[in-house]
Image 1 (cartoon, rainbow, N blue to C red):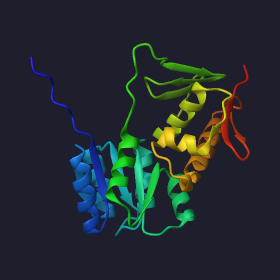
Image 2: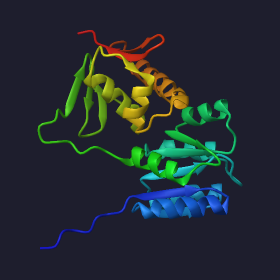
Image 3: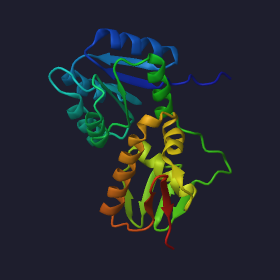
Image 4: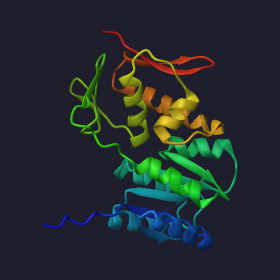
Length: 234
């Protein structure tokens, strides 16, 4: 009996520069992704609903509807990974993108191989081994790796993919201090020291969601000059 066909993961690329679209399409398609590409912000939201992609590569500056607006709207509908593209090496602009829901960003011009590496890191989901722990209990939290959920009593936290991965890693090793560079490598899949601000932004977002859920412990604590740890109070 033949094996069922493997379903390709879908990537929606939104950029008004034709050469960016073609480069991204070429390199991602070589890795086996199914590509949908649009050049207009308004069309991007329509295609997102139709395609239901596994990853969105989204330019910040777009005609009709800008990338930040699209990112916010996608986040209202889905928690899929988003890579934001920006033409300026402006840290404020990048942080705003992360705060409205992007999981990563790239500054133009970029090498398409770096885009591929980041795309693969974002869509990769480790398969659970049969004997692997499926639920991590950290103080008042339950991190369900199989369902990709975080629960506290009857409440369920709405975490984006990288927020979940970050909290799950810290919860697996309560009390251990993780340097920012190590978190960047283990959660995002790459190690570029200049991008550790990505870690800081995601930690702050997870903290805010824990607080909004009424959770005071466990808490992600800052170890100044080093990184972060999860401290538990039983």
